[in-house]
Length: 154
Image (cartoon, rainbow, N blue to C red):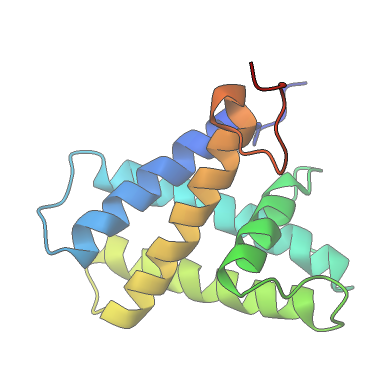
């Protein structure tokens, strides 16, 4: 079975949602794939939230496909945005879940044409931008950043 949220599909989703949010933050017209991009982003956030519920000890009602990849990637993006605060903090995953729920609420509001907060839109854009960067690095080895030189200088 192919993982529903493999790194390439997840990267495509993150880039799409990041693009939609960029246009909203900068008061640009909606792209042609507005609803599709937000729908995929909502699916991803729900999957990550369900995985987070399992980690926090709450059994999921439904929707869990058996992969924690969306949660892991979301946690990595959250760490990047929140200045390195990580899983060693006991409330970390609860904070990640809270953030994911706020992103999900914003995407739902945008999709349904309801009012939305500009500050929250920027925060959600930052999350999806960071998530897209992390996933693209994993999907395409030519974009990876290394902490040391891989080859000896010539």
